[in-house]
Length: 337
Image (cartoon, rainbow, N blue to C red; front, side, top):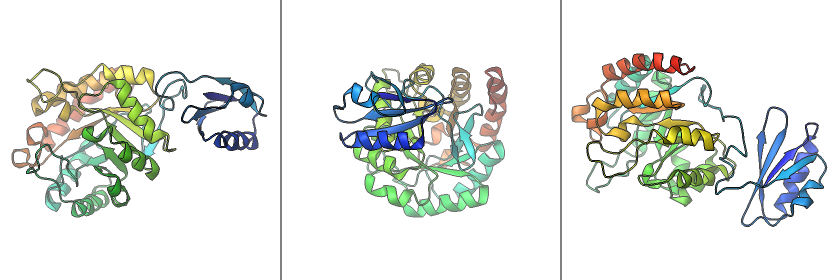
């Protein structure tokens, strides 16, 4: 349920309500609106009577939070969620770009990519140190050595780091190096991992599962939010359909649907969404026009010799050209890049 506090409610009133709901084995999650505070009360079959909460000092009214997802919904928070990623804000008027290779292959490769995407206008460097691959014989990443290279690239290029974590036990290690923890499509419903990244209180980039509905996607985000980690980024990266002309089918519809249902920022991965570099620019423009808050694009200095996803990776000069093409699209929809 949703507890709406009075405009003049004091901090002590809010603290008292949070303590009260805990006695019923529920949790209260704060959301600051422009004129007041609301508290989402969630738990397993919340057993608190509505009248019990309405009688507490400082409470204006109590409303039911309907629907399968609560904390990610517009009912809980009407305003768009904005937060900082190492100084760059996501969720506001400015569209952010995250770019880099699929995998960290070497120090030279990553530093070259980092400097190139920084020059083009990216604010964050993506790159996988741990790679969950379809085949066990494919390149699995450099592990902690890859994380150390990412940290060096951050220092050299001045970029935030976005990298994937694939298991709950890896979270303490990866969070030492990363600014944003990425949960990949294959792990979208790995609930132990979702709880672990939620407990890290690091920003989390959550990718939509290969065959997941939007409701399932938002419920996955709910796991992270329920651990008192409000900094979640939803990433549409294409879903599996009958079409074979592209690697996946990028669901442009998902962008406005997610923005209407949820207050969380939405980014798009046009690289995985298409699987072919020649389509990345067109789909990127479409994503911005549809309301995406950012893009995460694969960029490799030598994609023809990449150890993973070379066919969908842009060359640095192609990424530079893409950024220039995106600026007028962003301006046309009242955004900046």
